[in-house]
Amino acid sequence: MSIQAINVRNQFKGKVREIIRGDVVSEIDVQTPWGIVTSVITTRSVDELNLAIGSEVVALVKSTEVSIAKL
Image (cartoon, rainbow, N blue to C red):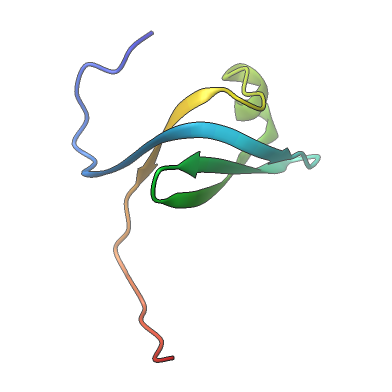
């Protein structure tokens, strides 16, 4: 399967760095050239996508809100 086109503009190509499996949801850390992107997805999806450390993936980020904190 390959992605032909997608309308999500914030795409980060990278490799799976860490998977923290849970019973229902899992945390996936993706190493990108711009830093680490973390996603929480169902553990079933982890298995169906056959994700493992080193898998090449694209993290697709769609957000309706961005918060800013002053340092």
